Length: 76
Image (tube, rainbow, N blue to C red; front, side, top):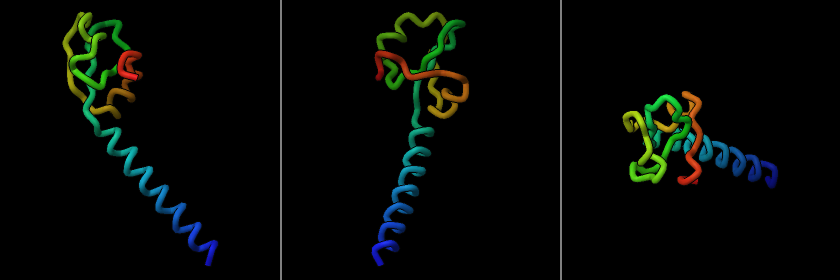
């Protein structure tokens, strides 16, 4: 009985974690389309986006990560 309870708890934790990860990947973030931009930003008002030499676009976090972007140091 104890083993079954632990298995159930572990399964629920995994399911919740994967749902949470999917929601996170679907979250909207901002990127600069400038030549040297390598970050994504959580807010359009991020200080780092003030120096963007290109256009600021809103995309999904998963898409930004696939493009090789990382979280901005100001947004951490």
